Image (tube, rainbow, N blue to C red; front, side, top):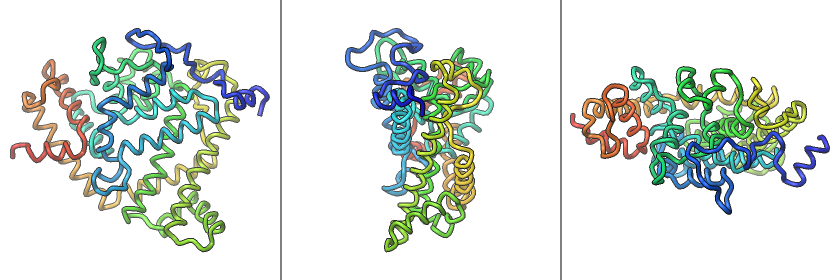
Length: 381
């Protein structure tokens, strides 16, 4: 470790390649600075206090919200992402408040019923620009949340909005101005955004595994084929020879997370020392991310993701739930598109055609699982 990097680690200063609190690109609507809170603290607080964030409590992560008291919801997943990312940000002397703001807002645009709901809504919107939850999150913080008299949306900082866009099709990037340029030019976002992205993957891979065990769809004999789990389970068994299987499995998952996050921090630290970008814009000019796992851990993490797709996400019981979700979403979209007058006040379209479809998608995407099911039961036969 270089002497300069050790100085940042010891004093807690932001590294030069971190996003600065004082030299950001600002907000769309100019606001005076707050005497006690920095700009990204304010962004974090605005996300936490918005309606879309509260609704995450009743939205599906993997198992339909309400299926069990201990399964993750979109909200608890979001909190776990923020915890992982903020820990790593502190170790790497990145901007913790920006990292947390991005993590807390990254899933605001998810519709009910998880990825099945998104896929169904995207099909419904196929002729009207499609639906993508990252773009919907940006739409929420830029337009749909209405809490302030001076502007629509939350008026978040450019850097926070940048981080919300993990994916963006090129056809949409062109309409986003400087926020979409990196998708057209194949460049990277800030380190804080990169960290939020990979923390999301770490969280859902490991915690979906945990929920799969709790559901009974996955067991020890299934998971032993995953090398990350094999290694962690053997370590847990050696440390706790008298422990039962259930507690050893839980200990193994904790060990997996610790191994991956530790590798992320050390690999990223080494990459940053080697690249030594002068500032955050030098990070954005790069084609490849600097926040990353080692090649070995990346391969193991990818193996875990493939296992989950094969053994959990496409399990027959899960496919049944997905089919129910698709029916609810498609029925609601068809009904409100044909009867836009049934949309609540404030949700009606300004124009016909694509604007009408987008207004319907906004309304459905904002629903919780239970509200969507209730509306579905009220649709006339």
